[in-house]
Image (tube, rainbow, N blue to C red; front, side, top):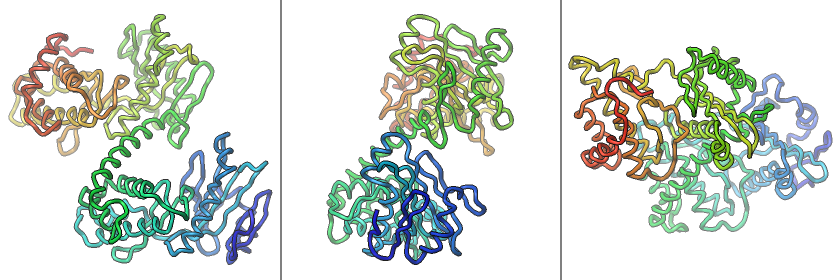
Length: 554
């Protein structure tokens, strides 16, 4: 590994090689390195972050604090990558290179690698902790929430733009430049920004326009919750300065388009995390079943809930909510969970040869529901939270499947809510409440469609009503295995959803109420008032459906 320059000392310990900053070498060698293997449980040591790739620890040391990253090399792909590029070594090299050219960087203290046959088995990288710092977004929210014109906020964004330009001009490009990797210290007017997570940084060398553009777009995308279009335009001006490299303001439409693509990619990526090993989700095979679950749910608990569900279905107990040829729903208790949580188990049955053939070529319904429920939650849509999914058998021979989700027993379905609250003569206050509910629901459905979310079974039985302390209404979705995501929802699918809603709500929701719903829905869609056009399309679709009079359809 070599000493890699002056000011650092090479130390060998327990089969690993370390490079240590010379002024900390003796203390690190005799106090820190012998305890590396047991630091996670040592007094005063806290875990900052932990995932399948690395563990980040905050370690009291020498009168200060170190941030120690411990990298784990798992799998053939990671082993092959380590032959070419080592994350701890890259962080070490980039931190020193940035420090050499005067860029604000974390102060590297040590880097170590334990290799076997040339393959990295374990890596270490430690820096001195920068006290009193926070990421860009929380720093801005804490100090300037509701004050977008504050000079301190403007100064921070200007400093950020100029730092990124200096970073690029010095020959560096960051593979993951977002607000969480920018640490701000100090107060407005005297704030300093440091760039973190250097293992994806390349350089020094020539930085292409494409790389600059990608860094700027990704950073601005990550700041979307605290910036607006005008902020992005000013940020671009500050980045370009007197020597434009991206094309000045003419590059802004392309950057906005790139931000939109990044958001779609972010949503798609986060939606798929539930079927991978991560800090929140896990999956495993247990006997005849393949299981996907949230990590806080014990591995044996879903099997127990499914067993209780099958017993309830066989005995036809009151816990069974629905029993049909295609599916069975029951209410169960999830053992081992906090307060023995009530859950709903939905079984998708595999009863025919056609069902078995479909499961060869499609995602099994239970797993599809689990993925869709988490995808809706990622997009901020309130749902009955999916907790686990189980599939019987192995591909290509896969049988029934089960989804275990949160039980919304404390809420009421919207069709039952309407029947309970608005039957009979209404007082002016209750009539006003009804109007508020209708409009809120119209906006809710319109917002789903505007965001490209289509629910293939948008009946009233699949929508539950929430009511906030201030009287405003919200809604939560269930039965989401037929949800689809895209850039837009076609007019045909919009009309189908609206007809499903219209046919499944009792007739005591009057024509006037339904027009109010359409008006709220259409306004959210495109700002126009074409509610009558939608109403005509919906009426034509409703004629082909069974329409609820007073008794709800289950």
